[in-house]
Length: 181
Image (cartoon, rainbow, N blue to C red; front, top):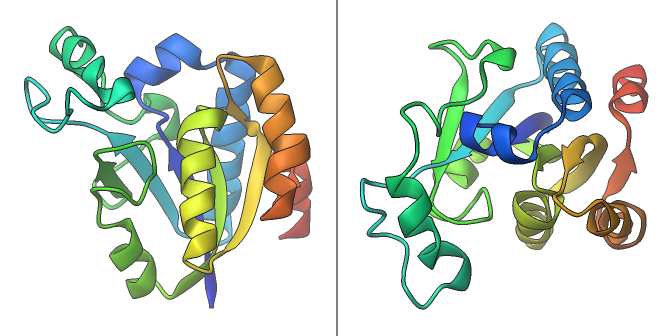
């Protein structure tokens, strides 16, 4: 029964809009610690076909994606270069907010015999919350690295990591998680 680190939505277009130097540094530190200890790192990104036909007009979040995706610069959906993602790294592409929806993440985790997930991501109220809820329903053990997550609304981030996430996950800093390995 292994552990995997999920690095979610740390892609160029999202890091540019919502990321900070501090959260990027925390996430890269978590990736380095995981790699040093042989813990699988799975980078999760969201990407759609040109014109975003997967984005239903009835979906409030994704109907706006049609315009954003059409206007994205080349490379906007690539994992941020700070992580040094190589050809041998695990990169999963999703089609919705949760890392599981529209991706092969669950199959990959089963193949790796992973039962515990460590979550990082942008945004706390988006991919982290959605993935945490779905992973809990799938009976994964969960840890959230609070300083490797960020949200456009700092108060929403605070409420989630202090009040909501602890109901289903351990919530720790990257330093505390690294020290526990």
